Picture 1 (cartoon, rainbow, N blue to C red):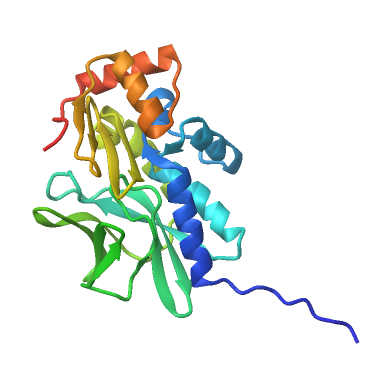
Picture 2 (cartoon, rainbow, N blue to C red):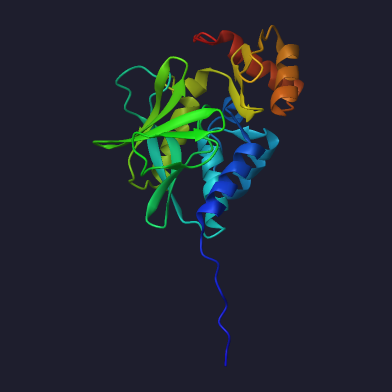
Amino acid sequence: MTSLAIIPQPSIGKLYRSHRSWTKKFGFNNINALLNGPPDLSPTEVVHALTRYSGGYCHELNSAFLNAINSLGLSAKPVLATVRYGMPAGTSVRSHLVLVTELQDRFYLSDTGFGCGAIWPLRLDQSGKAQRQHGLNFMVTKIEDGYLVQLRQKTGWVDLYQFDLNEVSHRQIDDANHFSARSPESMLSLNLVATIYHGGGRRVLLNTRYHDEASGKSEEIRGSIDLRSCLKHQFSIDLSTAEIHRVFTVAKNADRPSFS
């Protein structure tokens, strides 16, 4: 009698472990986009860039994560979201890439590429309920045209982005990638941003201001030498002298204030 191979079924635990390992391995930053323009999202090139810059922004991180979890038998689909965090009211461009996975008749949001986003997946069936992740609190609320993701801050619940469950094409993702990297309406085209979750909080670099949420420490970046040191020691990003000068030029000339 021929034995049948037992095929492992995708599990919720596998999704959570994969998501957390990804957010531990890679931080969020837009350095590749600032230096080289819209990132190449092909499987080999995107992993190379993530390794080179110790992370990337949503299109890089979530495109590579999509390939990684699909290879594990977890069927995720890409969708585009409209960013609300730090954006003017009425913004309608869907520029942020996220992933949605269905497991055991439940939908899970996987987003490894938002600067102040979740470190584990978020459940979509817990509408209006806080979902705690270490010292962070998130909430996903069902709204008329999709879902709204929020983060609890000192001032209350803050909108991050909203999305629906409609799968998008490679062309739509490419267009959103180009918008994020090049459009003057995109925060990521005109500002230096780097974040990583560490020690119970986030390390955040926004232009010429660094802040460690866990320790409460803040400092001003006064020159390219300071920037190189901050990126190397706080975010494990080691840039060349030429790259540092180019990135620092963006940071010091940014119109937006460093922190609100």
